[in-house]
Image 1 (tube, rainbow over the protein chains, first blue to last red):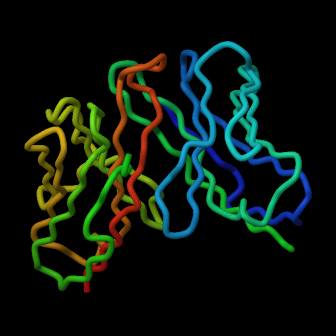
Image 2 (cartoon, rainbow over the protein chains, first blue to last red):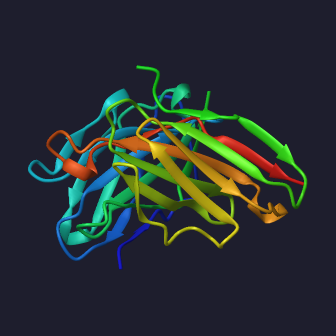
Length: 114
Length: 118
């Protein structure tokens, strides 16, 4: 069965520092992978997605993620974090073909220090 | 576009009462999803529809929960009777199969309904 693991529940970084949020997935075929962000009191917004092709994908708000098949990972990165990036980040994988469901990770809450 | 609209944004009710949550998807979208978010269980898919037809309701916790989609622009999630453990944020999301990713196109989420059952 498909699964998504986000090992870090909380991460704190200083403004201007680089950021990497980890995501590991379990899926038999080439997965559909997503990163969503949830600001406090808001719904989820798509940051970026990977389906095929270039393994480094660019998203909105200066985020990027790299798909590494050998490590079953899809880590999210940003070179310089802004205070407005404080939010919860969810990694998701598209479930088995034909069901069109997402399996979401448990989320990583990012705190940004001024 | 107004995005996915959910109402009410907040609902406080007493145990045993019926609760109805409402969702208006983005016009033209043919998939609609209901999720529940809690601290303990994270984000769970409850049910999803394609062209107004329920496709997978395996995430619906029990018979107290029901969902309908009478037309392409409206869906409801009903809990009857409600219990304190149903307290959560309920999200509706919609997507379209048009585009390169088909059913895995971006899901657009509504702002959620925060339900508190006393």
